[in-house]
Image 1 (tube, rainbow, N blue to C red):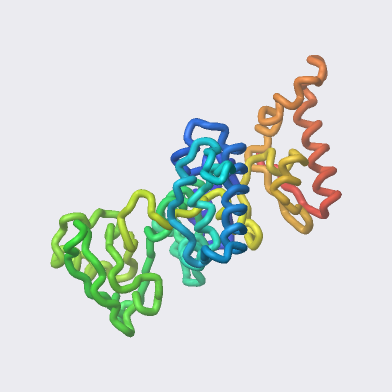
Image 2: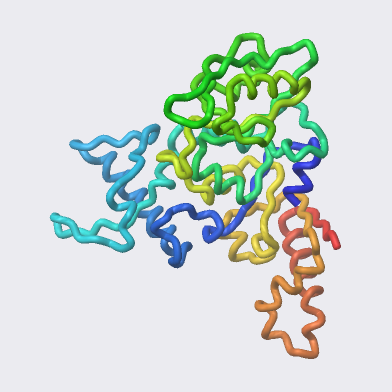
Length: 325
């Protein structure tokens, strides 16, 4: 459904909810019980933060939290010299409090108020799926910028080859150009792609000619660095939860709505909401495991059981519901 949204000019504030298993980017958690491991690391990260605030000898800055601690790599609690245990922590959770994380979220994951062209794959700007969230979490500084201008406007950017990268770097954003008015590209940014084609090892003249030939629209891959995982990488799971609080449109699996336990745990409020069940005929399959106690001769009524249950949930929370076959 996100792909369908991206082909329209509609750009509400949105997010996609998913499991920790799909969103976790902590390498030390790979292959473990992600839910339990995440909760332990988040709790210990908060405990560490609070202890640093209380300490008179140490300093902790939420705007510039540590990018790495020894405990980030721990797979289990480790004893220290004070006879206490140091438990595993999470560097990606720590970065959520930094202003730079919020600023990058606003630039990349919130919709632009500029007009979006219909039916163009480059119009993903302002919308995202789980893969986009994970990629953003790994490196919040890499982004796609879609620019559109009038015939009389110029793009307004100077760029040059970079000594420390195979990609060109923005030398100067010129005032009065479309890029300057857009405000999402800064001096010293790297240019990874032009119209979805890599800029690696291409000459400045070749790239400049390609940009000049783009009379109406230009799609640039921009970033401050080309790291797979940035030192400032932030947790995609908690980013999606933060976006949910102000989202006008939320995508999530069936059970996030129909299962009262999950709905309560995620604090999903259906009050004054319109709920759309896409491929509603799959609801019965989705919850067949939870219906095993139903007698065989009554199993055909499983879908209607969940339909009636959802109607009740919707009515209790003042929500409207729509089933899409």
